[in-house]
Length: 490
Image (cartoon, rainbow, N blue to C red):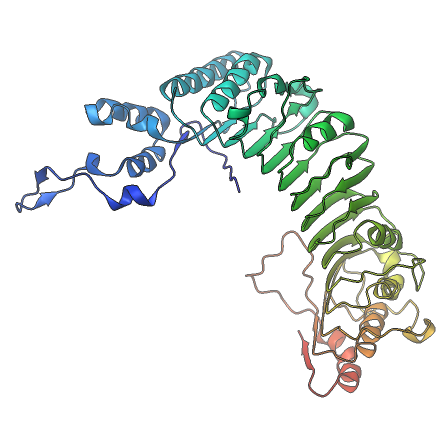
């Protein structure tokens, strides 16, 4: 996997250490005060020198070239180049000077690396039209240097519209199979995909692709992705198509990881038979992953969705998932015991449900059992409740005796964990229903702490809130659980 780091302008020299160079150090030619052979700084292996130089500010690293003839070109031997800035002056004149200085420095370093192989090239700078020709030239350099990992992070920090149009990615430069075939990792931010030319050969050996703030159309994106025949990792962040995101006509036969976050789209449809991990965060939309029989992990965060509608949609689109994490609000939890679906999650083993509960919805908690009716083979169930402090000992809502009897027991369920337990009737009824229908249960954990929060630090102690909530379920659980089952009340 390619790995990109955000660095300051000075840290554009990095080195990859190889074992062979460490096995041999240049012969020492000097002695220390005790008469023993001494090791001079320039006697270190070249890759170690490059690593040391990469820690210096840019000007200092370049200045080392005047120390001796041996050091003149040492700094140019680094196969990983990263250029970036942490901020840009808001003063128009200083910004212009700053941009020109950045361009000059990149060009100077790339000139020194002419004819050398460069494994990684990273450019991080807020895009402006003055950069277009230079960015195109830097891509030509990357192709001539047989670069394996290319990153152009051109996105502004915020308020994207005020920065004008995106950088148009020059697909016309990717027509030489020899240079393009080296590219394995591509990271692009604030770029525009337009229809590639007829002689565009695609990215035949691209393994990893990350797209951020992409401007394109559904057809152009599908065309580009379909040309990445060996793609294994794909991430799309804030790519607003305002249309469907589809890749179905030509399967992505090697794709194993797919992430779609905060994108303005109406539907996701992929043909990816080897997909093992899927992540989605955004508004509720239909999701269909064709032939994804090897889907191990799916993490879904829907905004503004009816709970039962989400489950029914996932049954159709991700029926073979093994481990499922659902992050949902309960604003739209329907008062229904069962889902109108003839299908079940036949491979689902581990379920983690993260629920944000609002005051007006706490009486519907028990209706979560509708999900259990379509997940009969689960082995581990986690339900993490988060509320705004209104759930303590709430008494509204139905009793479990009011629901239709469960025809199929949860015969594989062995581990149940509930956090954010407030002693609300719905929580207690849901917990007891699960335990009563899990004859093979081995471990039950009930925790009053709220684990569903972005600020939660697992290393910090969390205050226990009210043991009375745990006392409500202690006796019923001990009475219901098998003799050898472990009960943990926290």
